[in-house]
Picture 1 (cartoon, rainbow, N blue to C red):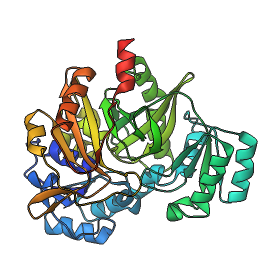
Picture 2: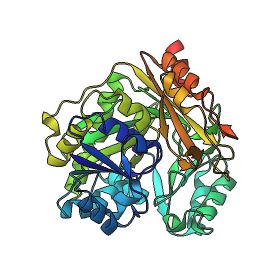
Picture 3: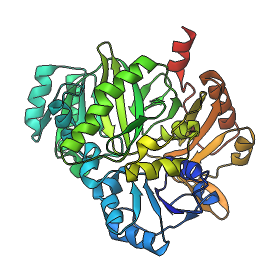
Picture 4: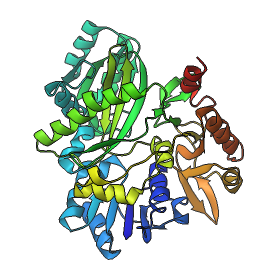
Length: 426
């Protein structure tokens, strides 16, 4: 089969890596791809992945049998609908189904209607009314841009003044463009966050290994939110009993709800969860693989990813084996100094081969090639991943890989998986 992976980050590199292991994969293309993917796939630069017609034309030109969509914007633009209409199988939800991520207001209203546990909330089109509500509710409180904001449109405000400033930044200063035309304001949920990714064909749901992301830039979960500074899987906070509860109270109801609403959901559904003292509640749904959760979940998958994706598209997931490694995986993100604010690009990266030789998987997130050298080209530059029999060993192995890699102004957190290690030590 000819396979096309759409996207250019660490998630897509991981997808290319896993798809390449399938005996069904003859040739893999990546659009636009990155230097890491170029070792396993033919990268096709110069195609706008947010232009459905351009993506379909490329897929037809390359005789693609399966397209796999990484980022959220092409999904909410309806690229899966366009590919399927052209007779090309595509893994991911339709435009209607992807609205579960594309609009937080839609997602919250869906959960309210179908009694799926989540934080209490209100939706506002008017900043002054949102100000009044925040003053009534007090802080801490959560302010979210309604639309897509590259994972950065959520502000956990510790004071009323912070919340009002966040509302103004989103709605009046347009920090996230049209994504901030509406805001969702939620109660602050106390607990521990975790993620559950699932494969689904619209009927059958197969949860993946649980994981936990580290959003804050600094050690100890301090500082501003990022796209994710590291992950680990499985997350000990998701016990087998809790996983069963998440499936029964959240995953099965939301897939049934989407079908009931005429938005049958096929692909990967990401449930961001808060484990509260009253049980699991939904923080958000994403319409695709998480980044950097994918980097630790897929290395633990023992099944054939191509076969699983085809089963999701064809409605045959119930008949398809999906098995998982019993060990653990850890990802440490190496970022450009200054991220998530301004940072420089073009810094040469050394030590990639040495890290791989030490047993690490190195997934490229923000890199480019310049004069035969790999250089930095994004805020999150690399995801250094290690698999081992347990979290402690995986942490040590991942950081051993990180120690081999160098670039100017490099920054990474030193405490990835600290919650898991604390929990396991207890």
